[in-house]
Length: 397
Ligand SMILES: Nc1nc2c(ncn2[C@@H]2O[C@H](COP(=O)(O)OP(=O)(O)OP(=O)(O)O)[C@@H](O)[C@H]2O)c(=O)[nH]1
Ligand SMILES: [Mg+2]
Image 1: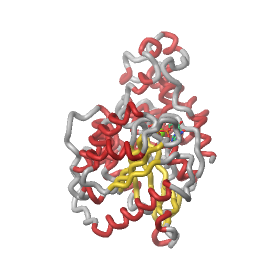
Image 2: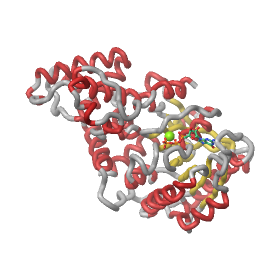
Image 3: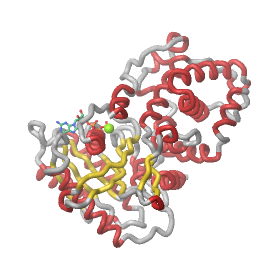
Image 4: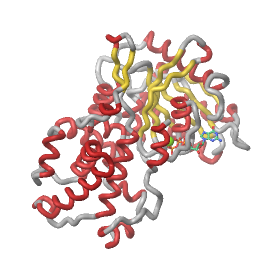
């Protein structure tokens, strides 16, 4: 089942324009800051990420001054918090390199970071198509500007056992440092060299690597491949919306809700789409035999609209490889960037939408299940919903 993830990653993101790297590291280690620093050249205000941010960046590689590294970067929200190791490995297997960020100012969590990283590397090592040595690992010790930060040497000594036998370069940096001078271009210059050397010897994969078998799969690890397979064979967008309108959908479950929200928000935008979702779902619950025993829940509906909308806004345009044109690559026009039938790619980048109890990260049960929350919009009591203002600032830049 996990092969559907590999297949879709390949369909959307391969052949890559250049190379790809997965950014790993505990919460607040600086993954998103680095990504947008490279993409936009500035430090943007970040919020803890909940899904994937994927961007292709161009970096001058200092050691090879005439060369530019084209890197498609997968930034995944807080490893060790939301996602399980096997889930990260599914994605990491399709990347050419691993970039591991360590927060040098957080002495207390260095061991946690090493433990998580060791688990992911162990999972990747099960992929026999690429020998471990040939998937370069770049270790970035961020926040060197913080008082009392761990030095790069202290970190090197501590991480050594985790990276034995691998092709590794480590660098200490502050993410506010220059992108053309100093440790950042040095580190990515090394990465370019390592990737070029690896691809010279890389054998052609004969088969899609088998999913990694480890401990019991978490809910999301099972559900995402199921959802992707379902999305691939589902009825076209127009038919699906027609069935929603006619109260004849084949099922009424969490997947159905998310696809409804996705399609209506894409087609009508946030304001009009939200109204259509509210009215449509309320009508469906009132009229369908499938929904007997259920009542319309205002806050829950609002929550999922917000989450899906956030996911849509976080999904960057797809880069088409366009070898024939001689231009190398073409970025989708905004209006074609998320197509109506692009639901599988949306799921791939925003897998958290498949977690039916995601709301519990934001709302206590008592609040979400209250009469007030059912009948009207109630704000979350645990933490604010993902922030579209920050997201919009990133898009605007
Ligand atoms: N002083 C300093 N702060 C940094 C540096 N790198 C990142 N930060 C700050 O650390 C905080 C967390 O950075 P993020 O980029 O959001 O971290 P992340 O790894 O994406 O975190 P999650 O999305 O939760 O996994 C932000 O406030 C950054 O501005 C650095 O080199 N120096
Ligand atoms: Mg982040």
